Length: 289
Image (cartoon, rainbow, N blue to C red):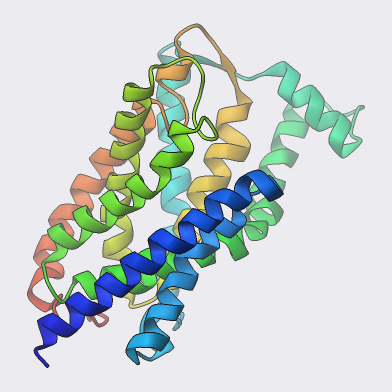
């Protein structure tokens, strides 16, 4: 059978399983009040596709690869998010820091005698380590599908730009039902604006993640990047920011500042990816560095 036809069938099987399993995952959000089953549905769709189509599970990128890509995958989201929030605080779109949030952390950690600065530093350390590691099962479940399976499979059809754009858009659209249902997002900015900012943010990250996955030949780069992005955005910088009247338009995954900062970084990776990956992408393997 023609290789492109084989790949088309494989992608069709994956997308069909993704739709079915994600529907179950969305139902379980309301039953279990947790998004973990939904996130894991993506990886389950990838694993089942491999089993049905006779692909080796090793093709999902289980090898660890070079440590430099793993460290980059951890540090890069932290740097981008920190830059975005420095711009937010400096521009008056939010204030450093939310005293009520810090007080709650003091009580949670039983550190009432500590200064605010010491509690903030301790909370950052917990976020960067323990909270980060607790995301592993759900994020691994999701990234096995998007970057473990989908990115290399799309690479049989198109170059780096197409792979990044298609995988990023699918990743964004997959989240949209949560935004429509009010599970994800904020209650201030219009839904259309939130969808735009979120989609820009996710697609831009998709360009970076596709580059890291294909350069390292390891799904762990995507897992680490995704965990780092989620934990620092959701557990530290956003809740640590004291809101002002326009904050909802600028902060978090639904605000314009993180989206624009990520787009700038993604542009740099896009240029690198076009130069380094496109000629070899139809046989997605690690690219020598």
